Length: 183
Image (tube, rainbow, N blue to C red):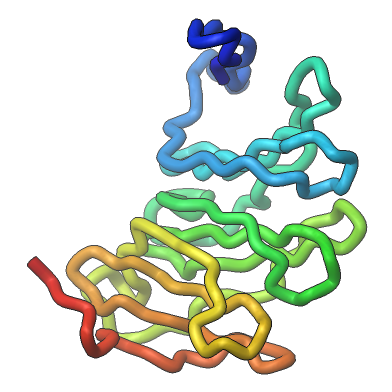
């Protein structure tokens, strides 16, 4: 993390080394006040053998506050997260976290008073990578104008998908979305 001091960037924080003395392979970062204390916290989307993480900002430094639990994925013990995005998907006033994963289901973690709990996983489909898309980007937006956030997945070599929330689980509403062109 680099702080901007009137046009001069100064490094003020870096993710600590893991137990083996390595840095995580971070592919995506997103700022958001996930614990509601007024300070921006940092989500890191990691891939390989490193879990995705959330670091809470106490106003002076960033402290590890959450990390993805290991699971059974084709490429290792953690999902290969390529993109992270904060959004209030359940409308309760706090930020929830979407993880766009490669070769594993993309996920949404619901934030309940500072505790992230797995709330949704992308259903398996017919994709090139063992049943799940190669998701490289996720974004929240109100696709259908109904006032709640919907989730878009940007996939490599697989269809772009939009999931819509209708007061419960996400529903796929657009697969290989019309009007979206591939170059």
